[in-house]
Length: 274
Image 1 (cartoon, rainbow, N blue to C red):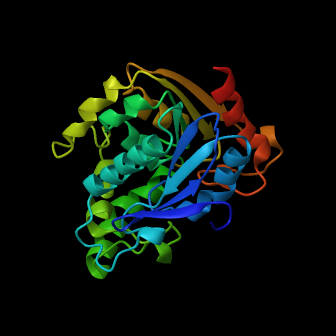
Image 2: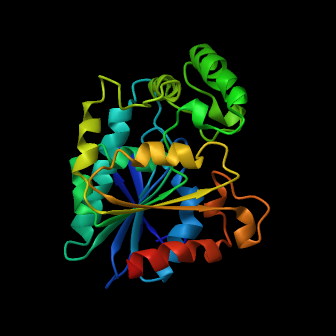
Image 3: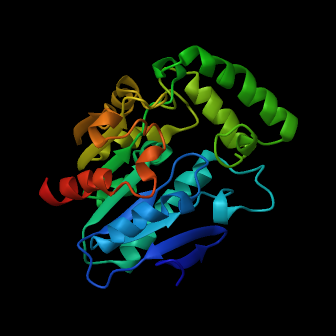
């Protein structure tokens, strides 16, 4: 045990398990693109002390799942990581309710797997269609997607996110596909190499999306453009101004900052009352 969690591994992928002997429910906590699971540890601990079992993970090639060679990693590997984490939650807690809480990319991947149906509710934090025209300051990101991503990925052999303030370095296949999706209005829904998008309508649980007005990426139109694909789900859109929580900024990442219990309680209340 370390910092309230147990570390587990499956192949090259590392998981953190915040145990509960008699949990209210078991939660899978899925990260954003290039965000290590350690970023979510305070939120995971909050959920755990609120009575929930929690399992988090790092995508292959990220954080504690970093391997020597990341050149062959694809989005299908990351989808498999999500499915393996789902299996781990269900294996460790075979007789309870399952919830899926995610950040950004985690909500995009959820709809790709048929195993999503095992999770009664899903909470998506600043998770959106990544098409650049939905962004605030969109012309700045035009340069990011059409110049920065393809050029730096080819120069370095991977995308050096850590050098440009965008999280951990990304495998080249992931980076170039992300560029392709974020320059398409349909995001990955029109990608013939990702037929798993057909699974989105099969999820029939409840979804809560949470977004913030100062998030340049997950604007309300971007969020709705993604979650309208969950056509069989009951989707609730919560969109806040940071001032509602006496904060100057929250943005795309701030929900998970230590000391955000006042915001985190929204999740607990929704899970326990809807």
